[in-house]
Image 1 (tube, rainbow, N blue to C red):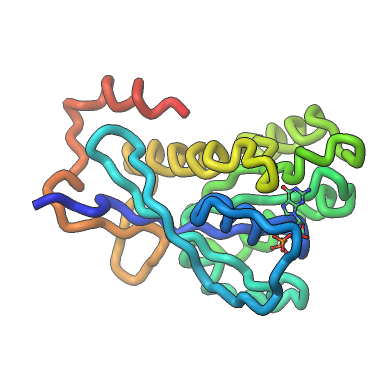
Image 2 (cartoon, rainbow, N blue to C red):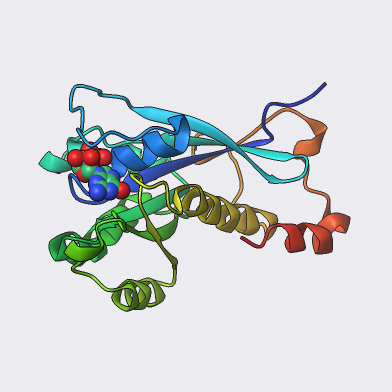
Length: 213
Ligand code: GDP
């Protein structure tokens, strides 16, 4: 029997209001973009599967804050039950860049004892003339946080898939090393029911080559 997915990763988007989190999610899951944000759409989560390597499909359950970040009312379980986080700032707003460390710290306080992996996303890269944060600054902050950096545009569909793929690969690699695993009572990682879900150590070398993203 063919499996729809072998693993499910729960991923959250973090960052100030209006940096473009919902737009990133909509572009990634539905392939659409709108210049007008629709605050009435209170969608909790989106989903999309990625074939991380031949035969291994990962379902991403992607959670949106649905505007709660405005009121700093995000609950601990929103953080605690996730395995990955996109730390998103708006390249045209220095303030949102300066708040990234606060976001990372806030999440880290809530996730213990679980592991959370991040990627830093400089968003709205299409607004070249309005840019207030340079690529070098983004890269420096990512290096200081020990994570990867990518610049995206939901409007022009630049690097959107790549951002999610990079984070998914990082999580998958950690899982292969045994540093993250699914367990009862935690929604960060879930296993499917296929025999393919079992990681086979003899496939190491080949899998590592394929999964360099
Ligand atoms: P959220 O509050 O972080 O979820 O942000 P939204 O996704 O609602 O986006 C806020 C505003 O930024 C909206 O007006 C979007 O149309 C706009 N926006 C989002 N992504 C982009 C982008 O890639 N480029 C440009 N130019 N605008 C964007």
